[in-house]
Length: 225
Image 1 (tube, rainbow, N blue to C red):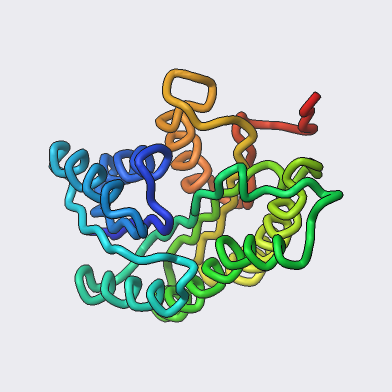
Image 2 (spheres, helix red, strand yellow):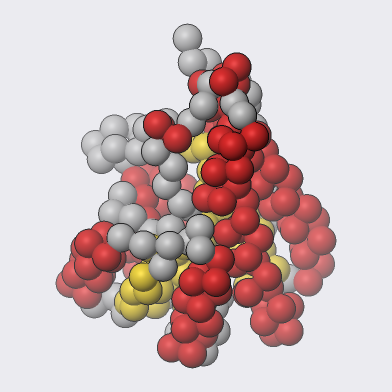
């Protein structure tokens, strides 16, 4: 059985992704610093007869993240798909006119450094076996400049650049790298329903030769007016 890992798992999109990939035959490993959220994920997936294991770690602690990924390998033997989607609260965003080196550093600790750490942990094994998938979830400020999310956009654009470089370098090695940029609030029963996003993510994961998509699909310009 293949293993699907969520880094930065929550009870919104993370849970929906776990249910979607679990329904497609994956067992699930979820990493989060929030034990209450992990308990919700554990209960929901167990009720659906999806094999699941949770791991508590603050992903900004790179050593703790490394140990969690190593523990998943011990538990399940290998990691086939890993998805990175840490949650950044809006109050951590800084307007571009108020962005400082300190606010950039804090956002790097949440997004950029953990993403590089997790790739370093899983990529050698994926290359050795000639298969694997690395999925990055961000907001649309990674693609379209949004002044209210100045620090997030700067770091997110760097993460997107990193992901696309991985995509270009690994395509001929049968390693899948994908990026989904979300341009809506994630709320059940709305256009940003997490189950709908999970379906879109799975479609992008399965689509050959495509690095990136937005949700909703096909955003060409993001208007915040």
